[in-house]
Length: 586
Image (cartoon, rainbow, N blue to C red):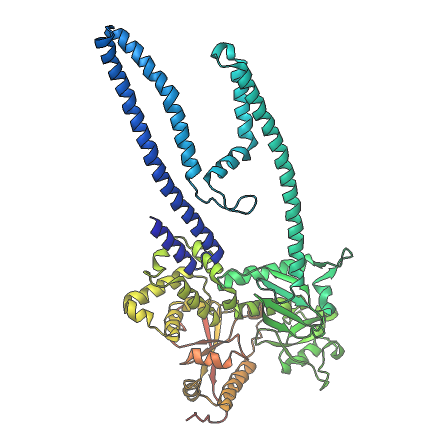
């Protein structure tokens, strides 16, 4: 059993269920267990031999006494039985009970099994642990003392000596009272130390700076801090506005449900000195996920294509209320962060005139950017601990598929899920992903399955998960608008990464023109913020080319776009083709 337990610890460590410190502690406990069992085995042989010898001696005493009493001392059989039985019992009480106590004491003393660090930080053994455990709970001593006092008080009935039992009982009760008072003091000291350690940890966390690992942190410039919170008068601590805190909490919850992995709570704080005026940053696990451009708290975002600014003016919005480009003096057109939607910033006081337009407040713009940044960087949020949480949630039915003898190891499953998230494929249906992997494993065999290239495996999984992927691309009216990529450009994309810089720029230019020419002006669709879709023969390669400028665009093959999914409506936005003929790299 011991080798099996050791292998179990190693497997949990490789699978990411425990860390190095936890594995070390488990091995230490296993070592103690093996030593204790070994010591108990030797002690049991010793005590067993002593007990058998005592039984044999008692039997010899009785039989020998009967023979001597009847034959030599001329005693009757009944008299001999009574006399030598009492003598044998007396001998046992005098010799065997002390011998048993000595055997147990000797076994405890010689059993040098390390039990862990004591109060002085050094390793202890079994004898020390027994003494410590006997005195650790005052209730045990109090009960023992009470029973001893009862026995001393009833000496006239029981025959026990009064003075010794009364003294022992009083000593036990007094010790229990002193130990209880001592424990109260120790607990108070421990609570004070814990509070001090907590304050020190918070202070240390604040001093570590902006790139402290773990969680999500939204840094905001002091100029826009008024829309997120304010500095309290007590120590200058940051206090987040409750409405904003609720919005940030909803962002984390909604994105966790959308992409299928645990998303940590978003903490908001003032940015460090050196941030550009009116900007904000999202830091995730110590990495910069997104940087927001300058925003103005007094303005709201209005979805409006460049050629539709006249509609704003016709609605009664004065030109002076629309934000202008400082260089050209014309209306400044901005992309809504993380989307293909363009618009302008207008003073919030004009909001009553914007009923026909899709608008977002400054905080809502930031929240939309956060959603986009979390989804684009979801792979960096999925680690071994989060994977363990996901596997715990689906139960034990799929555990046989994991491990060295299963379909995939936990490490490879983690890599697969991160690859899917990097392609904007939600992993919220983990059982379906495991089932798809199992089907591939059964269809191709273990050896061929393990030789799958990442791109080949992703193609199979995307096909299995196309329904989930399509759900993330549809708008509020469950409509998917898609572009078709030109065949000549597809042939060019197929040669990635051996493309020239000019050809990559051409591909991005074609995508940009297509997206700008077909903006989603349906307010209901804008509320859902659907991703645009491009059909191509090389979805993975096209995404690698355009994701720097268009990270929100999802690429499909025709096979992946399941038009048999009748619950959705499909709109073909046309073919994306280049104005000039591309020249393939030689």
